[in-house]
Image 1 (cartoon, one colour):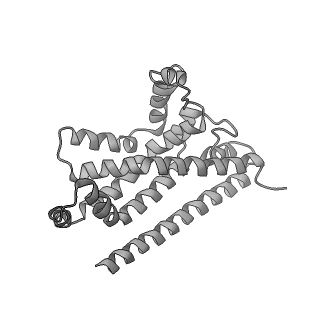
Image 2 (cartoon, helix red, strand yellow):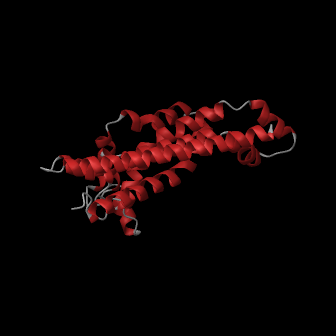
Image 3 (cartoon, helix red, strand yellow):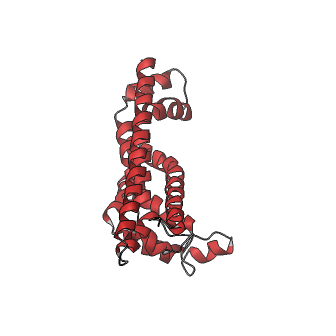
Length: 231
């Protein structure tokens, strides 16, 4: 008898979908936020920094409940958005949103550190050569911050893949729609005789995480080799 049911396979695939969506959509916002925090000097910068790291200090359940209050069927934003056909609560898109919010600080931090490590004289040299702000950002800052981007993507993906509290509070655990891998593991531990199933699911989660780290390491080494060649 197989330890993995079709529902388990569906949960694994859904988790990959949720984590990938949260990472792909969250990374550009994380890059912009990291750049603003690393280079910006503007009123409200400290507030932005605090809000960015808020998901790290809030209980995940509190974050999920806040999303439910805001974006639930009767939420402040949920009802008007539902009228436009945009629904997050109890949908996989809501799971991606919750996972992305929880992963956001972990994406921002390594990117910010990479940008702060870039010598400002490099940007100044590009400016004196006539490069505009957008050109300098995409042709200088982003390539030099490549390792931080890779690290942020992997950390964000891993966090989104393992997110439990916020997602189950916001979107519940509907098989085929919002039942993710962490929730399936939790359910297995609460089911008599489900220990073997929980172990298999944990091994799958670990394998995915290790693969993501190896891919990130390969990308980081590739970026570093490219930078060395250019130097």
